[in-house]
Length: 261
Image (cartoon, rainbow, N blue to C red):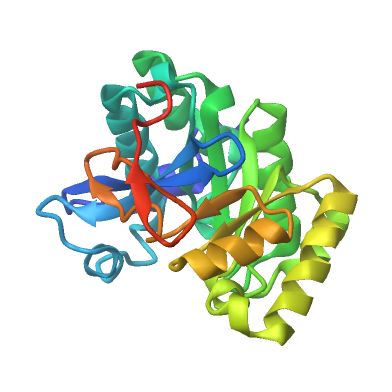
């Protein structure tokens, strides 16, 4: 392991104060919260775009590290460990220079807060073109350390099928572009159906994100999907764990207590 990686040595600090919003991923079969995804926000509640606009090539490493630490600290304070749910953290592969060196602050924060690494899910988006070999190195290293892994926005970016051939993450989150309006779009139903079949054959658990209507939820449930995320269930809660709403027959919804509460 490198004593000091390139990012620590050469990168600029990320001085903008940030916090996190949390959005649940729900398990509809067990009617419980499966995970909470940490989404970056400005300290005053500003949206992700406000924060990301201030990330430069020089500060990318510091930004990525700051997000990890803040997500774990807040999740620990909010009781995610006691709930037994996963904490989903987005990471930037281009900000990870050497996986085992760059993970040190994450491990130190988890140890300090008593957050088990087995409850941390690292997800990365395939929305930007990446060095596939480098991504594979990161994912394999994270898995060996006990973290869970996921590909985000699957079907809406670059990595896609090529990455799945060489590495099967624990989870794949299907891009909302495939999910939106799936109840009335046969093409989407065919593409998503074949994708779900492929993921199951590979032993990868699918998560459908961007679910906004009960019709979309019912269509996906009919296709065998049990893990979903979207405004239908809950919007992100700033520095809080929002209580999900469960769809009921007839189109109304019922608020229930969070898993473990």
